[in-house]
Image (cartoon, rainbow, N blue to C red; front, side, top):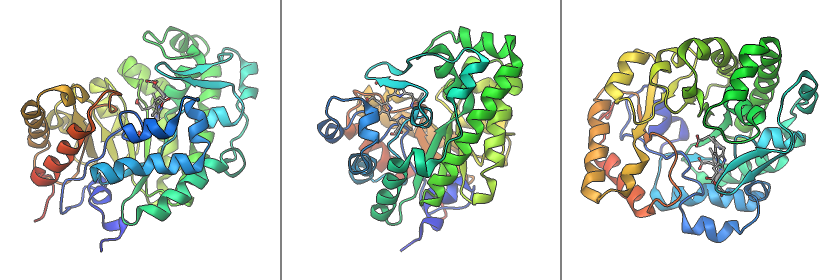
Length: 349
Ligand code: CP3
């Protein structure tokens, strides 16, 4: 039996030859699975995340159903700020909402140091339980990137225009740096704890980075992400950096220290490869909307991604963003089987 260190997923993250193209899906845990909805009940997702028995089961469900090459921990990017008492809820159908948004220097005191063993014992318990069940399948731990988490803290909830967070970064750059430092510290502590409990890869979700221009990204977001990458490099696990709408940012993201850069569906992987250079692996990038198309159209979309990925090592198949709530699980199962049958990036047999 291969050990996790030799898994197709971990190998591809390291741009090594693999025996099949690995595939997993962002937001595979929860969302569209009927067995998730049955388990989840109607409370806040934060309650389900705080119950290690439920959270471990939700993490395992897509591994069993789809045969994906990695599990991702069932949690959320706002869980660390919630755990230190910032005052967050996650509203179904909407997303994270702050009781009182972050706006002034005094709000920094609402982000005390995160001690994962003290503030998040239930998440680490979930990691323990999942690792015990997963066998050879790697577990991806994660956090939100400081910019994306800050966008929720400052806007007070989901945003389209990001006006408040941009006003703060441009107008109060010193406060912005302090906020980034707080979020880097908690992210690093949380990622390191997940690895200490058995996560074998990490993903940093900078989902809303695409709202920034390249110079804004370089000045206000990338330094914090790069600091997280630097402070997790010694762990020896691959780190993935993902964002949406980041076509113009890909070359900068490749300088973050991440081992893998995630790409949404707007940039074909051969063009993404030109932008990131040869040193990082690529993850992506099927348009999640194609899972609603007829199966032959979906299959053609999968093959376009595989063709654009080419044959050189270093491709992890994924959607270009998360699974949509009404996606038919059978469509995702078909994608997994097709990628395993036809993926060629670095495949040595
Ligand atoms: O990927 C996985 O399956 C693991 C679990 C996971 C969740 N959130 C569970 C969740 C992960 C990795 C996240 C990360 C996350 N959370 C991100 C980055 C990834 C991305 O999609 O860009 C972001 C931006 C958030 C913030 C957030 N949480 C949003 C925007 C929403 C959606 C609101 C909705 O209901 O559509 C959530 C809620 C959430 N987090 C759900 C799940 C399964 C769905 C709602 C629920 O079950 O209550």
